[in-house]
Amino acid sequence: MSKAKGSEQQGILIILSAPSGCGKTTIVDRLLKRHPDWSRSISATTRPPRTGEKKDEDYFFVDSAAFKGMEERGELLESAKVFDYFYGTPKQFITDSLKKGKTLVLAIDVQGMRKIKKVLEGRVPLCTIFVLPPSIKVLRDRLEGRKTDSLEEIERRITAAQEEIKDARLYDFTVMNKNLEQTVLEIEGFVSQKKKERRTENHAIRSS
Ligand code: 5GP
Image: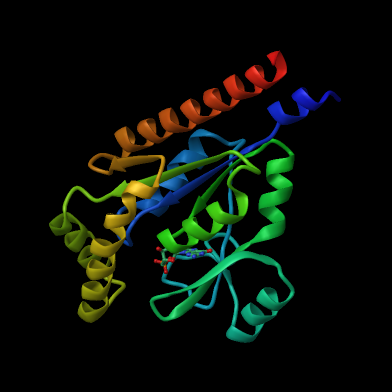
């Protein structure tokens, strides 16, 4: 296989960040439904499962000792403490999938995006997207409607959201999630644009 062909086959990693309650999980589910050839990177966490969450599908739910073991063995691309729990991105799945030319979706917070970008930028194609809530009021309504968090927890998440939104400028693209269908279409447009840029770059490298 020629070098150029190999690089064309390289996958792309979509990093999607959104404050808690912005509809990130629904967006990712919809993207995967529309693109059966795309995959989602599943994070490990010490957080207990929420009602309806499936083990090894939504997260790898592990205890603190198991999480520490993964970190010590270098199995995580990055890890962070978010609210009271640890979260981490398993390395192997991402590197293997990208080598196979897959499009991968990783839903992660801002600090995770920064770390992944530091490790992978320039080595693999990345498309970073920040999802904004239509307003803080809508975000509060969604968090309250979810009925999974205490009032204190909701306030904590709102404060965190206001901080995270300040970092939206660090991403390649931002999209305001007013309407799910529209948001998904916009995200698909961003990914196509990045893939096209990548093809143009590869073409330029081959022609030079
Ligand atoms: P939740 O507990 O609501 O599922 O997630 C809380 C926060 O942790 C979200 O902002 C989510 O994006 C972030 N998160 C999920 N997985 C990871 C991960 O692997 N690494 C990092 N740094 N953050 C993550």
